[in-house]
Amino acid sequence: MKRIISQLKAKKDYFDALAKNARARLSRMPDEGRLRIRRTRGYTQFFHVTRKGEHNGHYLSQKNGADLNLTRRLAQKEYTEELIRIAEQYSRAISFFLDQLPETEVKNIKVGQPVFRTLVSPPSESEMTDDEFITAWRAVTYKGKEISDECARYTTNRGETVRSKSEKIIADLLDSRGIPYRYEFPQKMKVGRIRTAVFYPDFTILAPDRREVILEHFGLMDDPEYCRNALKKFSIYVSNGIFPGDRFLFTYETSEMPFDSRLLGKMLDKMFGAN
Image 1 (cartoon, rainbow, N blue to C red):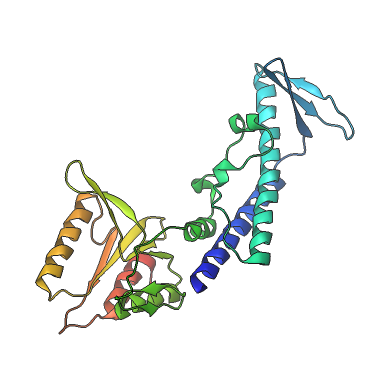
Image 2: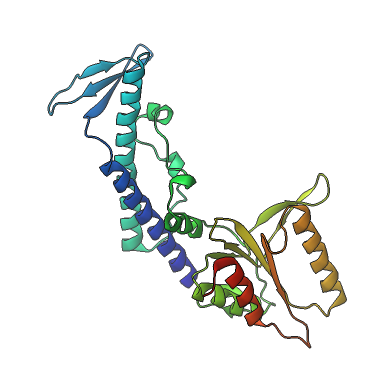
């Protein structure tokens, strides 16, 4: 339940940030009236309505550069207003009900008129502030690897269930530093020349430059078979362009060398800056 609530709060933060960013863009748009769209005999016509109470408006020729640009500005403004309305609606729904909402992609938001899809541009990742990007990244839902009843279970400070005490320490360390992470997030990788397979890295963390970095904990390195599998995974990551120190961090332990969270802290200091 804690995990569900955490996901819902992350979604609410995402929609709040989306609405805030859209309101800021709307405030910079000139008040040029509104766009009226008419369909007749298979043709779509656009009109610029400037006066309150006016119905018809001035015809905008899509062959005229100035008219076409004005059409796009008016459509973008109406799209932004609708985006704000929908984002606020979802945020309110989460606040009131704290229940799972259908997965909604911003790019699929409908603004009443299908023709708008050719005129407007949904907000891209490059337009998001870092905080907005992190909020959207955290809000992504996914199905991780199943944890069988026979496995040990540990609960992180964030309410997630992980497989080992060391993984709990890692998760809590990331959370205490405010580092965005996903536990056992599925990632498709090449295995050999043709075949692909889905891997579930222990942690996928988001670096300040928006890179996704894999963090693996190898917890049984004195077990020969486990060690061989760990080295195979290491090779697969490298062959997929995921290099140690760049997009790949790892920790380890054996029966004689327990996990040292201080070493991980130093790696995180290097990547994220000293805490």
